[in-house]
Length: 353
Length: 287
Image (cartoon, rainbow over all chains, first blue to last red):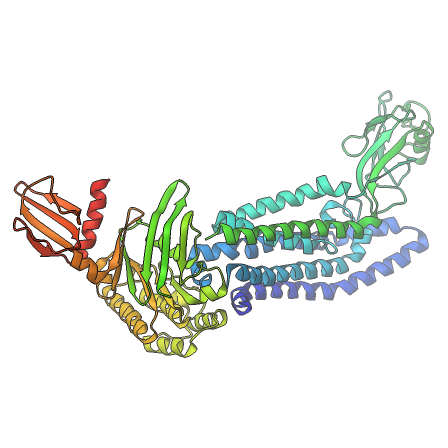
């Protein structure tokens, strides 16, 4: 049975191995260069304290390959589910060959066990390998990434560490089960993609933020968490303050909510994004007036805003929880995969023929 | 063991439609059984139930005294060549033999190799490139080399031309003589089965109409022709299978265990084909 499974699977396995080989070689060639540029840049910038600039420049330079690699790791599990999982049973049903193979001296359960085992393990291995290579390669970039692109950011989190293995195992078994239920290759592929994409969107938005209780903290306003203060040129109108989705002193955190509080502790309005929150500071006189020496969001104006009692209140998942979250999320997907595997065995014995 | 297939009240339902119902059969070992009936009569359903591809909705079926496809041992004893003789299009002929060897404990490699060579199939050819006849022969080879005690074939010759049809059935018959196994094969054409079968099951409208040894069936069915008369008076052991009337003449096909002694009738023998047609006809009338 192992021979037959391999004989049917070796084409796709070879293709995957070739693609991963190319990727591995490309990353192995460019990775060390990336790392040495990064460490040289860090050494230079710590001397004159311009590391924020260096991070921005460095990340900006490699943003395209960074995004491309992240996308590759995110797509791989979906492709596995689509092209390895969904057609596994439907191809047999469509060609009628299930009638041939299920009448050899081997039970359907055993047939399915070997097929799921061998192909599933290959899928997990491919996704794991791909994920870990990319994690290694993008290490310097992950350190210098802007908020929203850091390791804990929803898009990046799923493309690093061990989570891709969980995704691949789940996507593969999902494809197999959908194939059993739908019995036709193309609809099964479409449905697999739709379900997997829905779950991949639902988990980071609805489940992952609550894996552990997020940290809530209040911070004084500073360059670390204020994006801008815009002061209207014609006096009279109130200035608007826009927050950055960043936690001062906790780089790489995943910000869940980010609000501006006034001196009474009331939420002024969500202070990040858009046109910012209106703050009750005089823009006709004092440090925030257009003509003043420190105008335009300078320290003087920021100091005045702080003096008036405005604070940033932020809830976030800190970067230290990255590996914990990786294990939890991989576990969730592994459990889902086990459940679907059980369903597939039940279905092939009872319902499928 | 003296029965290869026993069914009691066997039924299979797809959704709300019965594909097979109230099927009770007892097929003795060592026969070549023909399962005949029009398209959609339930032949494939019955054969899939016998091979364990389907689970019955009602009743029970035992094949060689075991539950179909329950264990690897049971699977090894029953060969199944499905309708349209499916093979893996992407695998070569020799891959298929290797598949058989890997998945069957009782695989007869010598026989399989010899058969492939005799048929002129090239081992390196992909099965997808074979003609319909060659593909059927390959599927039959897989079924035979498994060395089953019962080989089930579902419409194996339906898509073959007359020459390939004859060769296929000839090969099957040679193998049954050599290796002594039972065969159940289905067809919607009696002429295919006439030459090879010694036991016949007629399945029409998802029910078994008649089943028995071909010789017995031929001996107990008669065609009566005579002047027109409508409510027929028949002896207690005689059953009308079909009837047809013209203005002056009536024709009946009846089943009777005893010889017919009635001077009013002209009694003629039925061919197997006529017999089967009479049962199909009867079903039409009842509908």
